[in-house]
Length: 201
Image 1 (cartoon, rainbow, N blue to C red):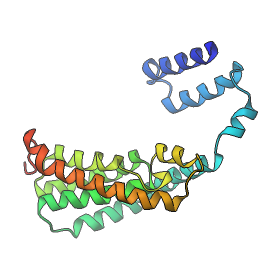
Image 2: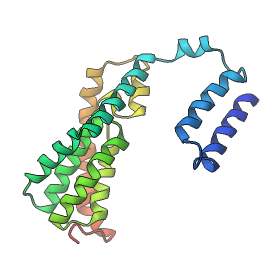
Image 3: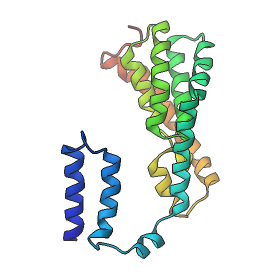
Image 4: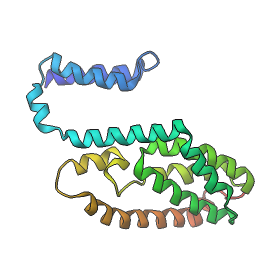
């Protein structure tokens, strides 16, 4: 426990104060290696406990997302969809939320927001929509991945337990996704105006 506490303290210290020189992802990997170096655990224990299939699945989803961005496929798809829309501003936000929620099921949340947000800002100029509203309408739905294991790390961790199949997750995840989408619409329509966030600039 003392050794593990030491490793954790080193990793957190590096995240907080050394992130300008050492990438936080590299720090995390070095922390994982350090656990073996100081004899906190044996490799056999880790190998038997970790579901490697889920790790490869999530890693594959990240590779696919990066490939879609690098080839310009996501930009082409988003621009094609947004350029053909002629909707009232609020309906545009509803469509934007649906599109973001669909994208974030197949790629990571960060990748989905990074892909969609710049294009949403471009469309917002046409519709004269408040940029704060646009940001919220992409960032919030971007975190609502409930159906597929590769949608977010918590989904992948839950799926690695082996207690359910993908079709079970999709069946119930779609229900939760629909409830989350309705909640977003209600918040955007009723609550945000109370905070002074108007859709139109």
